[in-house]
Image 1 (cartoon, rainbow, N blue to C red):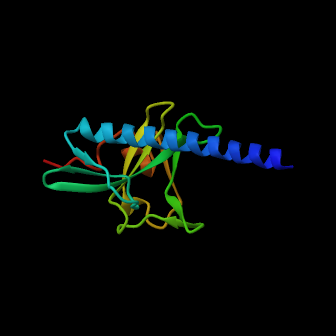
Image 2 (cartoon, rainbow, N blue to C red):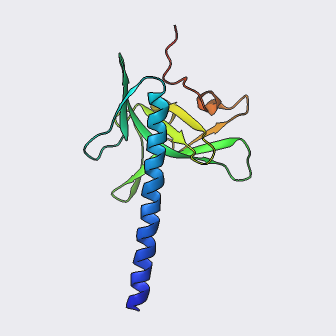
Image 3 (cartoon, helix red, strand yellow):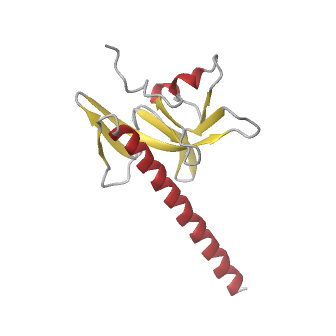
Length: 149
């Protein structure tokens, strides 16, 4: 019995480590996306509702990085879960938490930079390459951080 509990705990620990590793890789990938556009990226020293700050005068963004997944049975529709768990309860992100949600798919290299106003009150944000898709404008695009001349 004790051996089963120990093995179960070890499996949970390994799964958690794998999750942390891929989370860190997504955050580094998102930071790279911003740095390629000449942003300075800073990581908070304390636990925050955002993963990093991206700044390029005069703009400063708090950025939350999330996994971007391809929908099952789809070749071109993606989704980002736009919530986290706080004290065991699902909590969506608000303007008080961050200005941008960045979805990253490590397998494909696809990304989306989505303004927080697009995801307020939603637990999932969908993006598709279809012409009529609302999220299409953010898929593999810098639109959310580019200024109109």
